[in-house]
Length: 181
Image (cartoon, rainbow, N blue to C red; front, side):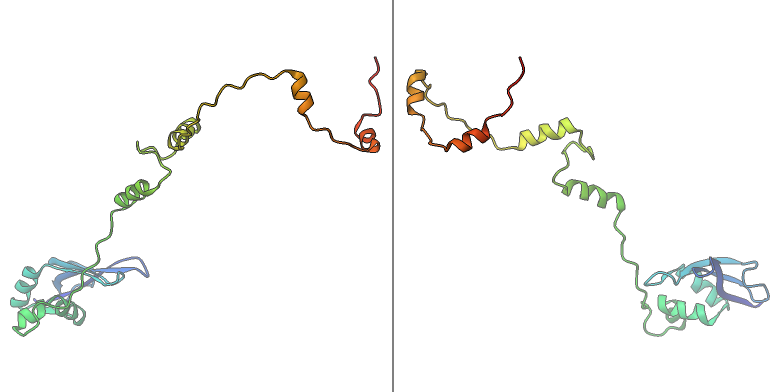
């Protein structure tokens, strides 16, 4: 039996991803497979490549022939160099950067918001907001003033400044109609 290590295509029309499989060369591309030994997804940057190195070495030693595409993938992972016994067995595989957890990022953003309450609520009710504002407002210290003594009315009237106004201005300010009684 002629055994090949090849790619099986999966995914939608413009978003392919592949499985690296060991299959009989006489079967269809997506037909019966003997064993799945890895994955390849070219859509991400850098491409996602996962190969079970032990199983790939096993099949290469037993005579399975990789297709040109799989051979290029095995060169990137370093499995082809290991099989051939040449330098560069570490390969040139780049790993995907670690994606931050969305929940952790959200919780950090909530903590960073200065107008949020510390007890974990996302929005405050109106009264709670007023209490928080009153609590955070600076305390005003009012000094006690000496008690003001009541002055007699005649003294206050004498001290009031007298303004001379023209008669026309006084006439304009006064209402012209008198209420009917």
